[in-house]
Length: 199
Image: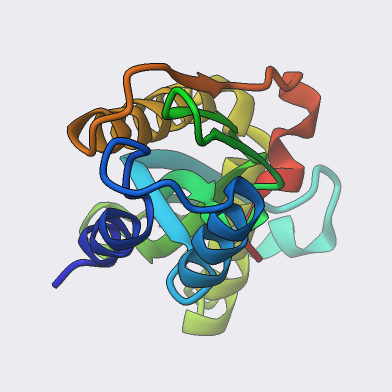
């Protein structure tokens, strides 16, 4: 069973509406947070990104007397974004009207994997020079991963992840019988996106 599905089953068990039972709101809030902590990550967006890393001899380098050496390396990354439900701090239940109010925590972005597209690496190496080693390729590919981190604000992951998480939580609450549902989505500046990385 996928982790999001597991989270939903947990919520299904603890977010019983006021029409079915009327527990103390604070006790219910504590129960929700305690259960969600067991499997908190809710990833709602998955995306792929690619950057091209290039490297060449520095101008004026003595090595150019033996022929130049350049390389282009495509680096592919799989990213996912969502929210950590264990970070939810603001949840309000009203035992009289069955209302629920949730404020989403900051989003989480994870670089799930990075791979080198070995089939499309392009090199130009002079006849008297050594080809790029595997270690050199790996070091250059690491630059690609860092570049992807810098491009996070342009990848449009945060807003869709927040919106889908809010929709999922609202849908579950509605199915459970809540009639007054509010899920607030905080707005974060793009400058903070790198801080959302799950390192």
